Image (tube, rainbow over all chains, first blue to last red):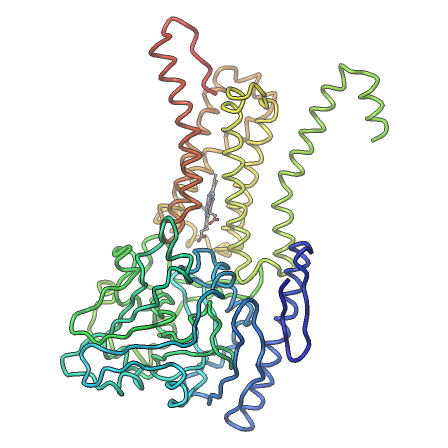
Length: 332
Length: 220
Ligand code: HEM
């Protein structure tokens, strides 16, 4: 039996009903809730600039808590993708390679307490407790486009804060040129990490150049649609780099290291021909196996139309300068 | 229905033919069930976040499954003595129908009839090229899957239909190349196809070495 508590009303869906009924019931209830809550929330934001949200219990996850966040000028005004799609269509191979596997399996991850170690070439390496961190930063809502390397896209209302905030606190040394990230390694809680045929070498690792990491668009996200992150979306804390393909935005981070050398990244290690270190969204540079010129927007139904993919996922005005003079075909 | 039942009980010789037809018709209807059902789910917004992709993948997967079922008929007979040869054509045609629907989904819903993008894909993307090869091979096989052609073509028919091995191998490789990293499912399907094709090779080798004098063992 699974329960969906939504704004006081509890809906119980029996396990023994047919898949069809169960699915449609679950879909309906979650469809109404996040959208209505969100729209209501946006109305309140207009009036008050900052507002909290009532708690809801997402399917199969820990209790989501409301987050206080202020609007950001970096948000797009495109309509966000429905919460049910953002939370049920995930690439998080630690919980399985199917798009719906993370939603089904990620509840086993314990996200409290959580320590984020920031070390390496820094004057003050620090272990941050995520709860403490949250009370010491100003959370913002960043509605970003997300473009997956597989050719689909969403619009996601993240809640987070600039990565530069954390990096600034540890005081990077002059020799630091890159930032390496690492996802938690917990085979006991992550079935994909104990799979017979591991999809990737664990733990998942990612990296950015220091200037990319310090860019104001680069955030650490802790929430989604005004509430704490569901596990399948990378709880409790994840990276979001909106002008790069989604896999760069590493989830459930336990370690951030300032380095001098360009760090190893998971997909690049897995297949260097197909996945580069930069992985900037670029319609001109195809993936060897498919075109990147267009993208399928998620949540638009069976007859959804592809739309053109934009250079740097539409964030060229903000980030093109980072790559001035670079051959983007070579540094893909 | 009642009349049919009466026929079956009264005339046993006709009943075998009737039973065959009924079973075959049922096979087609059940076989096309997943296509109809998935399309219905897609129309009613129950295929999740990316319904086009789910439909496309489901149809491709069923095409491969029916190809495998087609190839399994002979080994199944050799192993169990139960012959489903009479239904093999239906299984093969179902594989073709699914491949056709899969291909149509790709052209219409995935690529939105963008012909230049489709042409570029077929030329440039190995997994699409190989999928196309599998499909192209199935077309003449489907077109000749009727009694008239079997009669008219004689031995050429058997030779032509041996191309199904190539279609199956290409489809299995196509699946392997689709996914981002090595995962269980395409590997399992590839292994099944490899076993079914390897079985033919094994029978043929054994037939040509040990029993050169004897009639060649039928390989299909
Ligand atoms: C006999 C012919 C074919 C068979 C048996 C076949 C089978 C498959 C299978 C099993 C999959 C993977 C499904 C999954 O991921 O679960 C697939 C995916 C796909 N096939 Fe085919 N296929 C065939 C022909 C074609 C052709 C002719 C095209 C296009 C020209 C094509 C395009 C695709 C595409 C676009 C995908 C999905 C890729 C993705 O998931 O990103 N296939 N096919």
